Image 1 (spheres, rainbow, N blue to C red):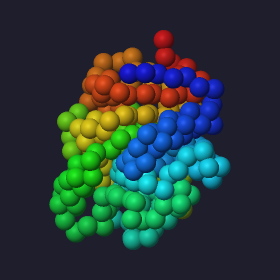
Image 2 (image 1 turned 180 degrees about the horizontal axis):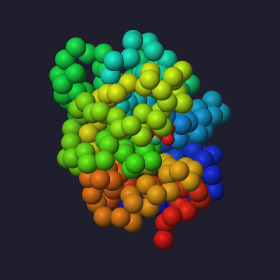
Image 3 (image 1 turned 45 degrees about the vertical axis):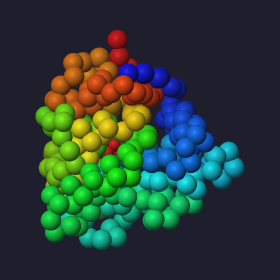
Image 4 (image 1 turned 90 degrees about the vertical axis):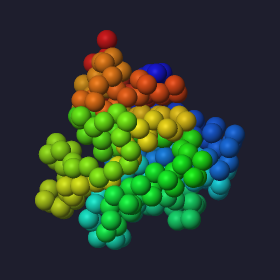
Length: 242
Ligand code: F6R
């Protein structure tokens, strides 16, 4: 695992955007796995700026979603499909054809999860998966004690994660209780994992991820098992590293 400490979130976004740009220059139809939440926004902004400046051609890129709320009405602005279309797909000048994600409105959720794992494999697999990290060490929505071999499936959000995500909704009660998330086993199949963590609130989770044992109680520690994992942290998120 490679750990890169940068000054702030903007620098982290710039660094990762350059890595994605490099990938797209080598492989124009690369499959990019994207996370939602606040942390990756500087990456999407920096990548969009590079595309608009003509530094990289993203027109062949394909985008795969990491997770999705279950039970939000179609088109809800905070469904992760809506967020990824708004923050990534549209700014990069792509269309929905370039996008894939799990169906959080499916009647048969289990079948939707299996279909998504199949679709990821049939598309050739994720080239670069961008990850955030929860304050409890989750990646995707694999909450503590998720199996490190898990596949895409439905999960229940912890109270902590629902509280963390309440800022995106009008009221905390609106935060869904369930999500579909790529499993840790699914995530580990991506060719390159890039985790970005910023802010002091992530410092403990980062320390456990990087310096603690590989353990299901800290799902992000599974990155230690991956042959090509990069952890980009700002100084605040790095503050508890030894
Ligand atoms: C969202 C996701 C989550 C977030 C994590 C951190 O797609 O996969 O694991 O990355 O909850 O969220 P922020 O970045 O909002 O602190």
